Length: 421
Image (cartoon, rainbow, N blue to C red; front, side, top):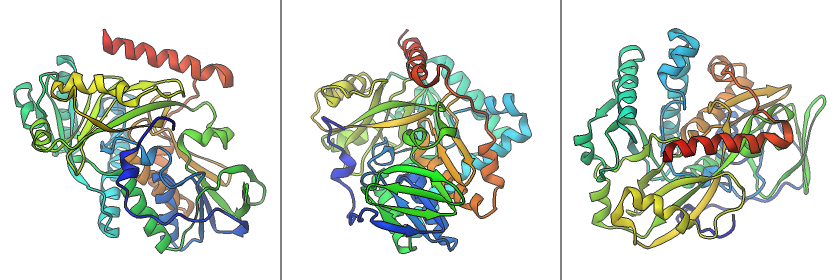
């Protein structure tokens, strides 16, 4: 992306670039996409004894997995109350239980492979309005009573300074199972583990053709690979490869900045070192890095053209939360594309021998590892947990190929305007 400097790239652990796909190859499984979903799927399949070839269009982490805010937010975008209203209590509890598995899956990968990714526990959802806090209280009560969640703490407005120094919010909910990490270093850790497990990783290998016959064939500029099955884990680019996925998502570009190191001020502003996201539709989200920078994401753009200055675009949002940072130097600014579904639930599915997962709608830092592993499990016939997520209801954005994105943009702008009013 133009006009950017990515903090995660600047502080990434060592990674040896892998050669592009060259010539003809065969495998038991092809994975398209080298982000969290694809790498977790490839690693899990290799651990199950499959020969896996993974093709990545650019470098590992070029997509959202190397560009997100690093926030680990448990669950789905739907609240427990919304799940109960849609599916009934029994099915809602089953869906929630599968989604919560993502927390343990990520933590287990970090521990098992010794991944140095600055993993910290604790996430705070901050109430933008008093009515939001009331809704959070009802949700926390439902989760504790019927879903067995004893890890949530309702934070009253007068207690927020334990977590965040600002008068902007009206309380919130602290989730001990949430947290934050360095996303690119986590991905590099998965990639190293995948290589050790025997996965062939091909970078700079953009797919130019994906076809199904008796087997799946993936063609790049440098070669081709054939396998009985494939997984497409390209998130915002999934619909360019699979007809089944077209119209299911629209892209939104989020922008992040990283300030200069803040020293003791960092601990004053965020004393519990929790990641924070507020309850607006177009939310602010922020956390501290390991070297005490404020990593702040705010505002969204629905056009693919980046702002002339990412720092200037995001700074007002940060200053609105923390006036103390209005003039602090900003060392890095970068953007990433988020794939959003109509109902903001992840879309998992299958088109004959090709499996896919995309549309994580801002909750991808946790759910993607889970989704990748569930795809690998389902290919081996262990489908129970995969089926829970694949059965979530979805429909295409209205307007067809030419008008879906403009109409979706109008809807998103409407909700953004409601935030401001």
